[in-house]
Length: 443
Image (cartoon, rainbow, N blue to C red; front, side, top):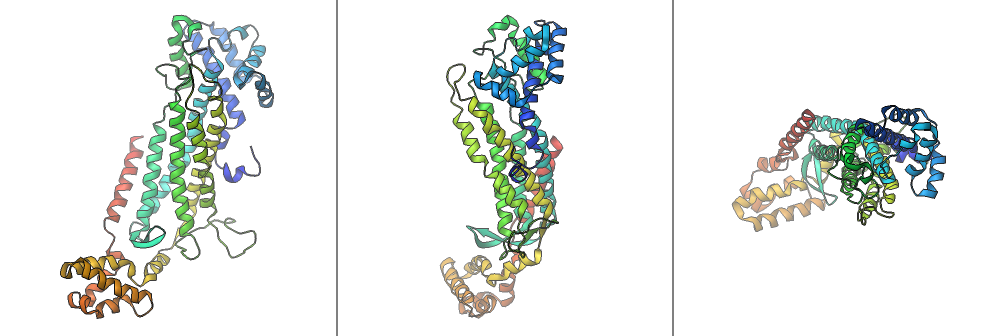
């Protein structure tokens, strides 16, 4: 944990669910579940399994000491087993029975993920709810549409936010579908030391942990880790796109939105600044994800029945990916909650080109009478003169011999009205809101 950077880059409740203490708790819970599962099928006396569970729940275990001792054996579970055994007395002989260190570590990863996803979903669903509110409130708030960072044709701010909402919903759906399965295979995945009751133990173990029962142990079949990494990375991509757009819309020269929060957004040197801090922090956290996801994907090819080093390589990046993703969605939620929209400024920006962003519409209408090429040339000539300061586009179009011949001044004025050229923006906003409500209703 970094006391200097974590308040910004590991904000929110997810951080605590993947801390060293949380990891240790998951490892202990897995060992307790293993003993209980083996008691369920008659391999371990119930009282001995209960004693192991009691030690795992109430015994003293020092994170730093476990970590230091792991150096000699290559993984924390091996060191932890010795500590549990030493405290369990007579029951110590049943600790870790039939398992291997990777079983405990992989199951702990899945258990940790299950627990970390709870606060992550809280922030994700709250952010989606805020996006739905903004989309609904601003379904008709006309805004410049931007393509390749240049003004294009009009949209609405509600349509912009509906895109964010749709992305958040898709990411939530994918995360809820991630397979979180227990791992129990023993030395090479066959559970040979448990005899014919191995599959029964696996089933009971999975139930005890509240994780899916896999078809077979997945020691070197790492699609579950890749699936989890990809889903977290996908969410960070959605967060990154939304937060980046917010920071661009909050620029002084654009000023269409702003984050308003007491004590937030100031500069260390410039008193006049009002930075979109939450969106900036969301962007910073989200940008950590691609490298972490790529590391986890790079660790996927694992040899034989159990790999040398590749599954070890997953521990830190999966932890950091959860911390970064949790922080990213926490800050996006905060940004949405702080966001103030300025419809008047949006209208000013729409008028900045004097109607030139609607020239496509004028061309399309004029082409009905003159053909596409002649219409394009005429409207382009007028738009260039308007942008050069030679007059208002409406006047120049009305005065142009070809344009004025076929379109009245009133027709041209209507064609240059941004609010009258929004296509199906409102329909798409309504569809996004309906899809969001349906997703929520199906949970």
